[in-house]
Image (cartoon, rainbow over all chains, first blue to last red; front, side, top):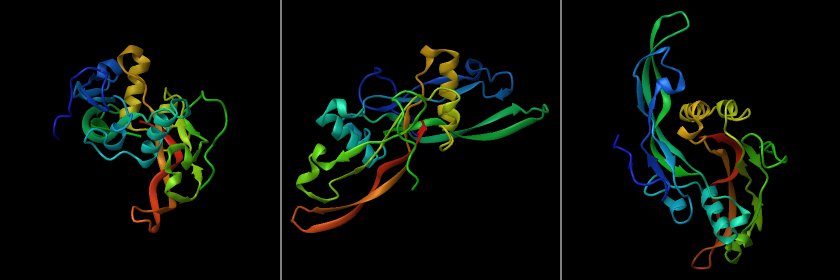
Length: 119
Length: 119
């Protein structure tokens, strides 16, 4: 998959940001053989209009999210803006020791964020 | 569909909250004939562990969301908590005047939040 549009400051429109996660950080290094970590990425950014409509070229926003962005524009106190969250994800394969110390290779779904959207 | 678990204070775990939206509020009353509004509901609440795992009985959380909740627990500054967002939605039918003043009945997808989840 194409590299997500990464980099840039924390602000700005809702989009994918680069985030490398090492399994040591979450204490999984004791049972995960490989990989040592992976590019999980994460979503961050504003879901105000008009971004909430298209999610910066990504998947179309939920009608509900558009409605909330409209409500927020009409009366900011009336509704929070939609949240910038993963909209398209990919799996990774992990080699690990199971509880009986067998070596197992398994694919974990929804581990890598490819694209973000406003929900 | 079953009424979402509504009511209760703004805090607490991620779940659906009641929200009636009148089309007048978003300026759609000029072209929408019916309904005048509908129960759109919205999602609010914490996505910390263990809620992030099951989303209070709702759909299972994304593996990516569980990973982020683990990272947040290990080092709060390292990652934001996942966001509480709509996970299951329903459509509504709307009767409206189109640009040529014809009366049109159309179903709009993803307008009512039935269930929330952590993403």
